[in-house]
Length: 319
Image (cartoon, rainbow, N blue to C red; front, side, top):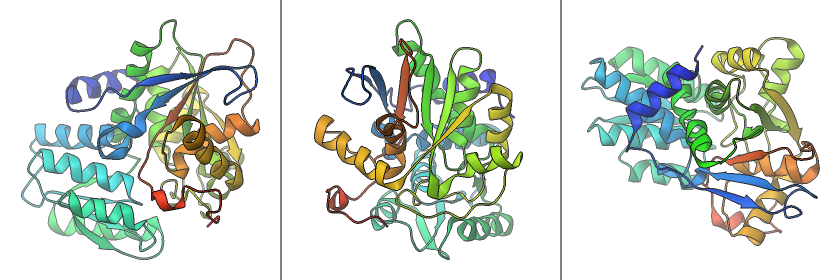
C-alpha cells in the first residue's frame, strides 16, 4: 500500500532526474464533442514512457539503503519497464539484465540493448519472463525491480500526478490512465487521493482491472490484442487493487479497433506518436466509453511512445 507521502518522497528522491513532461490542451470537439481535454505528454519521458519515474525511484532508494550490489538489477518486462530499469541502472553504474517474452516488439528489444542491458527472451508471455527474472534475482542477489507491483515503483509513477497538479491552474477533476498491471493507476490515485478521481482504461482483450472488480479480487485473465506488448500483465497488482479500493478508482473498457483509431487520430490530428497502450485513454474519450460531465476537467495521460512507426497507418492490421 502507498499513499501521497510515499509519492512526495519519490518526487524528492528523483528531482532533477526525470523530465517535467508538458500538458497540452485539446479544444472541444477535437477529441470529445463539446468538451475540452488536457493531455499529459508522458510519452516524452526518459526511455519513452512513465516507467522511468518508478524505476529511478526503486533503484535510487535501494542504492541509498546499500542494496544495490555487484550483481546489479534484474527485471521482467514487455519492454517499457525493462527500458526504464536499464536506464536507471546505467545512471547508477550498475549492470542490468532484463527478461522479456519472445513476443516483445523488436524496437523495444533493440533499445534495451542500446541502453546496455543484457536481454534474455523467455516464453511467449510476461508471466514466464517474470518467473525467470525472479529466479535470477534469487540466484545472484541482484536487485529485483518489479514492472508494476512494488511500493517504490508505484510511488515513483505517481510523481507525474503531483507534477500535473503544479501545471494545471484550478486543479483537475478526473485523470484517465491506461492499466496493465496497475502501477501507474496506483501511483496516480495515491497522489491525487481527495483531490481528483482516477479512471483506469483497458482494452477488452486485456482487462485485468475490470476482471478484478467483477470478481472482487485480482484474478488471472487471458491477454491479447494490439496493446498486449505494454498492457500485457495477466493479473492486476496487489498494490493497485488496494489503492483503487481505497480511492474509488473507476474502470472503463475499449475495443482494439477504437484503440487503433485513437492512435491514428493522435498522429494525424495532433502529430503525437504513441504506442497502442497509451492510446487507450484517448479511445475511451473518442468512443464514448468515458463521457465527461459538463464542465468536468479531464486529463488523459499519454503514457508511452515505444512503438514502430511502420504500423502507424490506417492499413496496419490488428494483431
